[in-house]
Image (tube, rainbow, N blue to C red; front, side, top):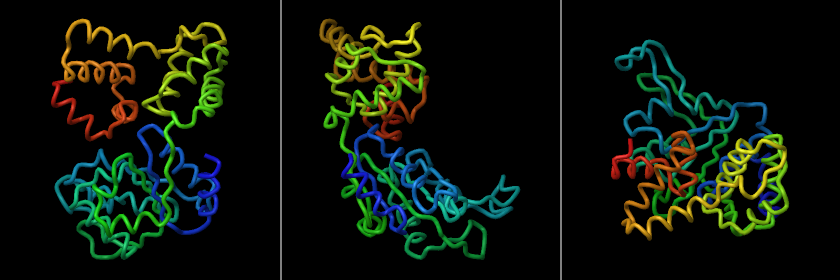
Length: 285
């Protein structure tokens, strides 16, 4: 992590596009915000674009904006995400989830550094730095020319299971934010866990444990780490199919995250679009 941050530090004040790779929950959004907050554009806007959540037919209006009267309901001019970013940073979260048609439109704006609002005639200059991220295989999902445009610098965040020495420090930091501390036995349990949901899962575990703890110290019994193992044990005992196990696990994660689909997708290690597809597949309302 220190080597990674040293690399990023060299690019903070240079106008280069940065691509952040890593598993869901490994901290890609945190790193994108850190790049903005400590770079020369810190006083300008940081605009987050959740690529998996924008429907194909709304992509242009969301990204480029539109003029009054362009379509039914366009009662006034609206600036798009690229325009709202001004000279700051526009962050394309899970850029590999964009359809080919969306990629072509984005590529043109990035290449020409300008775009036109829907229904407009004048051009708007793109002045923001572009930071993108993906937990998927960008080589398979993205057009080659778009990939070359967004990855002048590529950094890969390691999963938390490869950074076991960071678990205790991160856990203690999340606990302090909740007004708690973590018992030494609980820290050992956290360090032994595999963390498939990475840093986001660790933060969620500490936040939940803090809510369940009346005193000021989080003890092992307050940690929600035994539940997946219990679920697998019940599944094997009762003869569930893999689909049944996956469906029940998705329902439980959605319940624990209060149906926050972005957070649930990160814990599950999939993107938001895949989560929505699995909800439809299993009939999860």
